[in-house]
Length: 340
Image (cartoon, rainbow, N blue to C red; front, side, top):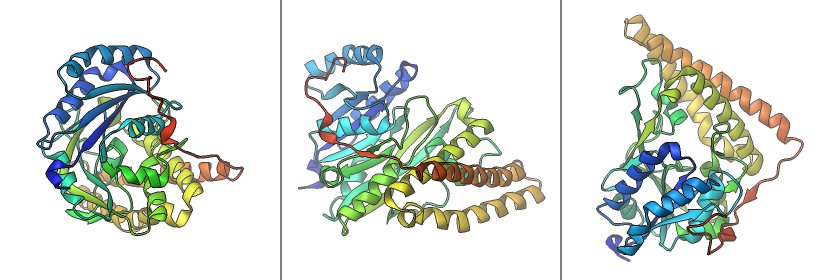
C-alpha cells in the first residue's frame, strides 16, 4: 500500500473537562494533517459529563461525514484501558496516539507513514516538545528529565533510529502489533489525577519485541507534537513526585517483563547521560550561568527519588502483582456516545 493511502486511526484519551480547549485543539491538529486521518477517536475515561459534552460537540462532524467518534472507556479507569478501548474500535491499518493536551504538527502522520515502508516496522514514535505555561523552561529544569513532563529528553537518539520503546503520547503502531500483544497492561500507567505513573508503553513494546522477534520500533524526530506543561508541573515539588512515580512504574515493568529488558535503556541513561548532565550543570554554575547548580541538583534528586520509588515498589511486588494485558476486545459496540 502506498504511504499516501495508509489509513490511520488517531486515539486521544481524555478524562477531565478542565482540558476542554486543549482537547479541541488536539482534534483540530489531527484534522489539519497533510496526510488525513481515517478517523479520530476520543476515549472518555469514566466521566459521563465530559462524554455527553463531547458527543454533542462532535455530532455535526458525523453529519458532515467527518470521522470524529466519541467513546466511553470500556475497561477499568485509567489510560491503558482507554487506549485499549480506542484500539478495539479503530478501523485503520495503523493506530496513532496523541495526548489530550498536545497538538501535532501538520506532517505528523505523514512522517509516521513513511517509516512503515519497511514491513518489519511495528511502531514509530516522534519528538515531543514542551510548551511551558510560563513561556520558557525553568532555569533549574534539566533537559535530561523532560520525560517528567511527557516530552522528549536529552539522551534520546536523533533522526530516524531503532529504539527499545516509543513514548506513548506521540506514537503509532501497526494494528497487528496489538493482535500480537493483547494491548496495554492495566495497573501500570496513569489513572486520572492519581499518582503520575507511566511506562505502560515501555512494557507493551518489550512484550511486542518478545512476541515478534524481528519487529523494528523506531523514533522519527520529524514527527513533532507540542505538549502543554501547566504551571503546576514546572515546580520542583511535581518533579520529585513524578520521578518517584517513575521508579514505582519501572519496578512494575521489571516485575512484568524482567529487569534485564525492563531496565536495559535506563542503565545507559543513568551511567552516561545523567553524569554528563551533572557535569554540564556544574560547569555552567562555575561560569556564572543561571540555573547550572539547580540543574545539577535536580538530576541528583531525580535519580535518588526514582531509586526510592523503584525500591519501594520492588519490595511490594515480591508478594505478587497481577497485570492485565488488555483485552482490546473489551470494547463493546454500542457504548459510543453514551455512558458505560
